[in-house]
Image (cartoon, rainbow, N blue to C red; front, top):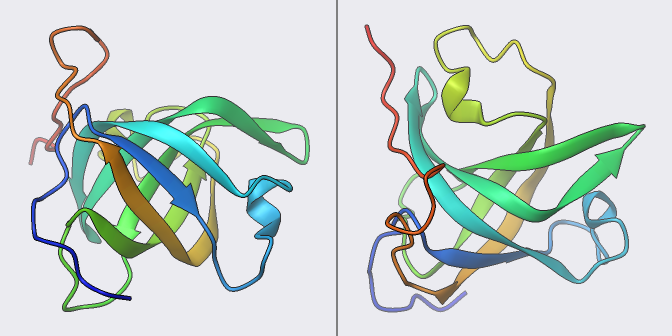
Length: 137
C-alpha cells in the first residue's frame, strides 16, 4: 500500500473502513465498506487505538455493534490518512470501558482492514459525544 502524506487521525474525522483477508469481508455483512466518525483516542495496556461510532450498527449473532476500536496492525505504521488496522466491534463506546478490562460485549473481527480518511473535519463542536479518554491510573 502506498503511503499518503502523514497527518494523524483527529477526533471528528470521517473514515471509510473496508477489506480484510477475505473479499468480501464477512464481518462487513456483504457491504464493500462502512463509514464512521472518530470519537475518541483510547489508551490502555495494549497501546493506543481510535474509537469510532458506526453510521449504522453491524449485527452479528443477534448482537448489535455500534462502535469499533481500531488498532494499528504493523509496528512501523502511523495513524495517517490511510492504514491497515485491526478491528474490534463493541456494543458500547470502548472509551467507557478501558478501566474495567473491557467487560462490555466486544469481538475482534479483523486484523487487516483498511481505513481511509474521507473527510478531515473536526466535528467536536457539533457532537457532544466526542471525547478524548485516557484512563485514570
